[in-house]
Image (cartoon, rainbow, N blue to C red; front, side, top):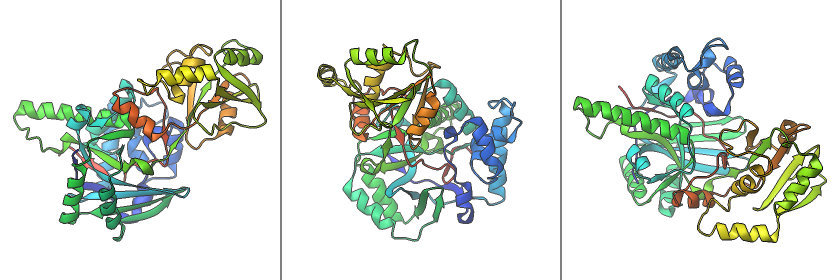
Length: 420
């Protein structure tokens, strides 16, 4: 596959820690507004420009996106952001709870996204794409890196390990994540990395499906405009999108749990009975249930936790169905097909307002709080990275909210300029 170095726009080293921000979509509107009040340099001000307006402002209005562009240009002018002239790669290392992962920052081809070399496993929603499309077009920059993964390449690991012996460009702690960035611009190292990625047949979107789809759509729009004007060469920066690529073995996937707002008219005892009828062993637990293996689930309702596991007949049916369909054996699929839809009445979890999702480091106490007295919470075992790649390799899609990767990539450390 093609992964290229690029001339990066990035924060000055002395303000990098202040600029780095969690992805725009992990905040709701109120949380974003509260955060930027105390963090004037945070990239969240630019990623979520509605925070610069009154709470009742239409967050998708043209003037909101114009404000994002204005803020970015101000911070380029005052040297908060620097513009590298050389085409470089960068290494981005995140250390969290004893776990370390190191990704290569570069730009990937929109054509390889289109032809399936960069593989997807989730559907996207048009309204979320439209927001980022307008954001990219207003700024002329891609600002949110796409989190990609690839099957480990030992020689590339050696090259990247050697590059980490240099003096870091940035090194800081952001909350509980230690972050380090190195620049790779020496021609022989750049060429070696470029050549090694050409030996890697494909990559997988781990996180950032909407950001990827939006970047590709803007690139294709700009390509059509250039073709109509007779100026298209294929080398324009809009032919590529900003990415950070990690070896699959380094990634940590956390569970993505589910909460249903009510018991669908069932009493707690009736719900337990229906779950047993669906083919599950049900055992009350003295405490919160965090599943330790695939095929095990926790269920919280009416102030009590229950441990669910597959009875033999159901386990056999799922195993048979998943031989030719890797989606069928996913725990998120099993929960949807055997409990959420037939018992809880959740037909399409992408749009049903009765279901919500809690991912990552938010624990079982959050599930209990959100479920309250009348709801039902389900805890799951995390989807494996090998399961993700198997689904993508088969050209299939996972149910929504199947994976939560931690730690999250920060926005604002690397910007890719696509328009002059």
